[in-house]
Length: 584
Image (tube, rainbow, N blue to C red; front, top):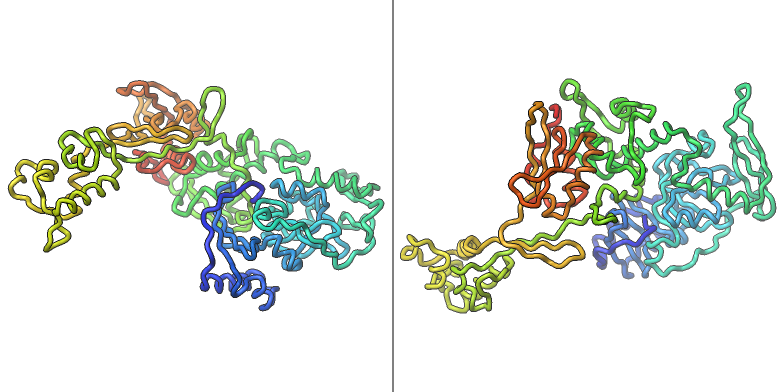
């Protein structure tokens, strides 16, 4: 989570009430800590700061800093200790051991795979899936990382110590550690070290008390003869075993000799969990299963890979979602004949809570510029007002002339100063403003010239804004602001009926927001699994429109609002999305 630099939003001293709440939260989260230890960790009088930040993946994190070091961090209402805290309380969490060369991989953002674990003489700590655990190195009890268990101890042993073991959240030497005093890893002697036991039934790796010389490394070969699985014992030096473990145990993209079908099954589940954890909200339900696949799962697919259900063992989306329903992650119902929707999601399910989101793929948020791709960032659009000839007298005292561009706050300030400078505020009622000749000429209609003598402040300001000409300023990232008269045209989404009696979705005015219609069409074609075309927009000079087969407003809504982060007020036609339970 902190493998890359984060962005600090705020840094404030903690309040007394928040300090007391933090103590209570620490007591609840870590019941093994005594009262004195909690008071030591969260001191009563020493400086304690709350730092709110955004991790490089966008996660909002709250960090508690004491004595210049981060001691705790909070993510999605869960409290986690930092390595600085764990060095003071090394037994706070169940601890698993790995090899020193593995640390570099963890710091780089990798998760810990089960082949990278070292089996202690007493066996692995007993944990459940989703439990928070510490990770230390051979020969040193000082934790170097914390992570969430991807499976229980029993499941780890049943798997033969294969697969993903822990989703790592924070490590020694990552950017959260660097935000403190950057103290080196302390040396804490292991509680006990026994001689290695060779080739135990659990297929474990054992290390002798001196951590020197040869070790016996045991693996389970997947070969069967007459129904028996052969256990192979191999003599390897500690350095050789360390190298093998760090490479094989932490390769995030390793396929481990899996078939293409097994790889596609894993990719499906990865995209499924990613979509539920960070994209689908409760307000989105019920959600068409086709929309869930096209707008959510496809966009969670890693760069360079593509979800193809036909190449998985499920073959059909309905069969895959049925399996996820059997695991009680989601609930799917057929709200109308032949049309299924996701109607409920258990966001507290261990598979969702333990899933750690990978690096977001930039391919779904790019625009083509020449021969290179750049991440899309929405422009900053600011409404302005232009002074017309009829309003020049009112604004000339403040140094503005015909054609000047002003922000709404500037207009308000100019009007207020004008009224005060010319003693126009009613002495009996401060909420009223007397209208002099200039104000009468600028804001009153002809039939009001001799009947309206005073106006309330809000009415006066509203009339002034109405008389000014609309304008706007657009600023694209890395470019200077561009000011134009009139109102910016919103992205327009419409539905049309073609001669074949099929609906098509048409979207116009993408260029005004820096979007390339051809890139948008390519993204929609892949997500909607429908044909797209780009044609000249009727009645608009040098403008293109994108046409997608079927009602694809749901997909457009997600792309424009969630991924491109365009304000809803600049998009019209989103209400045309198909209602759950209705065919497109």
